[in-house]
Image 1: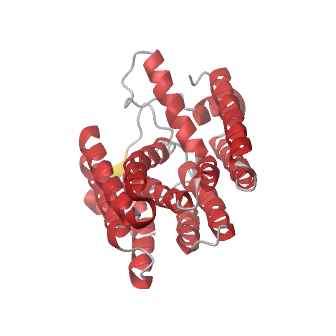
Image 2 (image 1 turned 60 degrees about the vertical axis):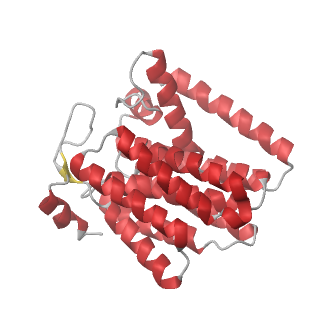
Amino acid sequence: MGLSIPLARALGIVDAPGAIKIHSQPTPRFGGVGIVAAIALWGGYTGSLYGGALWGLLLIALTGALDDRYSLSPKVRLAAELVAGVLLGLHFWSSLGWIGLALGVLLVPVMANSVNLIDGMNGLAAGSAMISAAGLAALLWTLQLEATLALVLVGSLAGFLLWNYPKAKSFMGDCGSLSIGYLLALLLMHSATQGLTAFLAAGVMVGFPIFDMLAGIIRRWRRGKPIFDGDRDHTYDRLDQLYVRAPVKTVLIIWMLTAFLVGLGLLISKVALGLGALLAILLLLFLFGWAYRLGSL
């Protein structure tokens, strides 16, 4: 992971302070390449990642890396995410068919961009994704599915956090955030092979970045701003601005919220689909009510 820092400086992939950024020093933002390299090498060596799943990961990681260096347009990024989604959907063709293809095209852009959008404080995206991945590993294990990929993702993110939290020596960049989102989408697809209840449970576990992205879309639409414009009114930003006033502690709160979502997801996996859906709806109402009170809607 540390090798990405001199590499980022050599390639000019350094995040400078700005109006909507909270860091005060130029910081390398290529740490995601270490996360992707660890998982791709493990997956290729063990045969756990292969075919469309592996090619989709490599495509989205390359897209993120190019975006880190050259700032690709949102349309180019979205096109690459959709292609990666098709590749992932085809990987699950034998078990999910057309439903898997539709899920891949939907989940990859949603998860990639939602993880990218919560990468606004040191350790926030990596820590939240790590906790979600740990929960997904537990869920897959209870479903008697292979959970090693989720555990390798947990380990890779834990290693990255040593460089990113509480004080960042490196940011993951879009190479990292888009790839992490892709891998979470892949794990969601695994859960979908076991039915709607398992898929709903997994969706709740990764719910925070999805919720924050939806809140951001609603907020910008209500304010008449382009949905791709950045701002500092995310739920975690407003929580910090209004109450905590310490980003390190704010990140810990979001980690605890993610852990709660993991626990709720595990509970949903054990109950009937109707009750699970009701719990998920109540959760959404609570989260969006919270966002409204914070001024994030």
